[in-house]
Image (cartoon, rainbow, N blue to C red; front, top):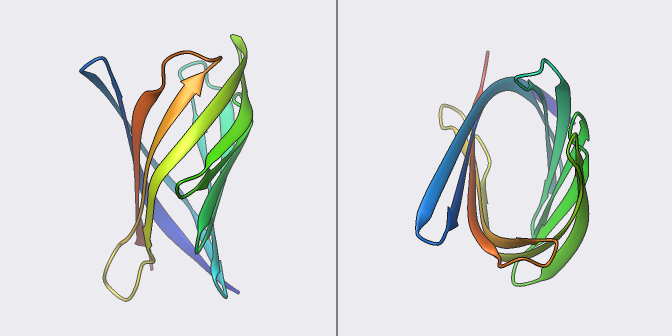
Length: 142
């Protein structure tokens, strides 16, 4: 198993009724690579100084995002599939239904950054689905 420190830049775009909301998170973390599975581990702290730990598992045909701490969820992405999960945070619990359109992963190699891109639609508690585009850039550090 290879373990490397990485710089992570996560860009989340959510489009709803023509409005686009963009959130960017930059953190340090670790990339663990073994066979055809890659795991990205990092933590982020919100404005209330509460920590959320994230574990993103990337496999050839699916990605799972496990978050624990201030926010708790296990979200699974599978191309052209609908998945469900429960999202828990300080304001309560929401049922999420996700339809994944596309997953593209390019691992970091030599001097080239890696990139994970997921395009999907999510419906919270049965509301109208919102379009999401998640891009995570990974730069290995020496």
